[in-house]
Length: 61
Image (cartoon, rainbow, N blue to C red; front, top):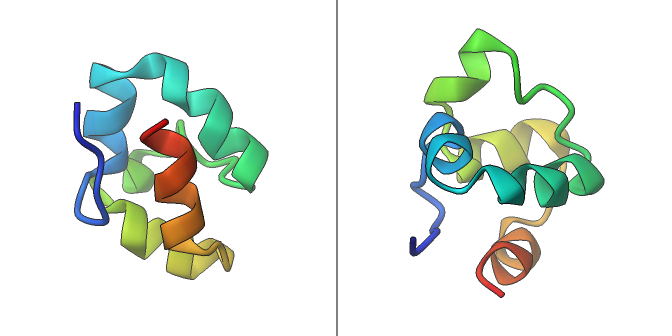
């Protein structure tokens, strides 16, 4: 799965549940929240003050 800024959190967790640990370590502790499921990675990063480019590097390793 290619992960980019427009990838929705819900889709990412569904398709690659092992990536949840990376999101949690980055500071996204709301993965189970219904609202987060429809957010893109870019939107979630803005809310949490996370650098989206750095997170994408980690997620696509």
